Amino acid sequence: MDICLQDRTAVVTGASKGIGARIAVDLAAAGAAVVVNYRTDAAGADRVVEAITEAGGRALAVRADVSRSADVTALFEAARDAFGTVGILVNNAAISVFGPIEAITEEDYRRHVDINLWGTLLTMRTLAGQPGLGHASIINVSTAGTTFHPPYGALYVATKAAVNAATLVAAAELGPRGIRVNALLPGYSDTEGTRAMGFVGSPAADQAVSGVPLGRLGTPGDYGPPAVFLASDAARFITGAVVHVSGGRR
Image (cartoon, rainbow, N blue to C red; front, side, top):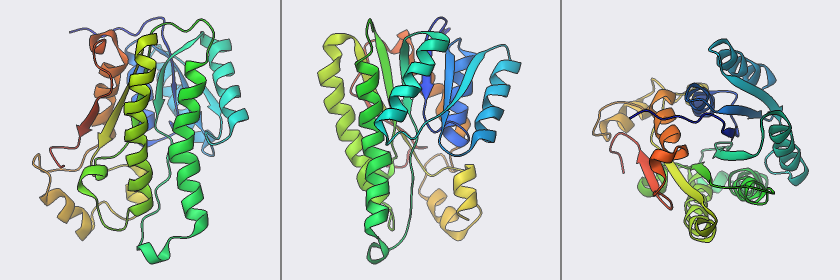
């Protein structure tokens, strides 16, 4: 099955590295023009854009804090000015602070809610509000941790569980307008972020892998193809799906 996203414009939030970067590259390889969103890592976003353009694709890096309404408005305006109406949105931007419940601060709470949940709602709202929007696809990147509930992840998992719920509500609300909304749930993964946290190669990673039926950590390359599929017309009758991409770990 060939998947073609030619003449489609995609915004991928938090796409300067890791899962978001790979999804952006894979969307571009399928023909979409991709806006690579970042908040702080301009160099990383530029590298993703360079990889896409060197392969013959179209891409643009745009800085925006997804928790700020004015930034999200500007992000979508930049996307439309460069490539046209945004018909694909991948909500990947997130923060994750892990630690014991007694160490959670009010600042931690507000940052998780503002970025992980409000950022997702704000970008979905902005996509849906575009004038002249036809069929569209929204993919919210959540976590399989919302079903296996890892210790020390209360804030991250709670906000991602809220994203799952928002995905289902948005799918029901926006479906009559031809806007599909689905969620991807990655499992334990080997990314720049988990390496920086010291997770990859640790006893905790070994223990995590022992509970994964496919016997390994996920990689960004495992998540790009499912996102491309959900963005495409091949998934035209799929909405409100919360899809585990976690090697069988639930």
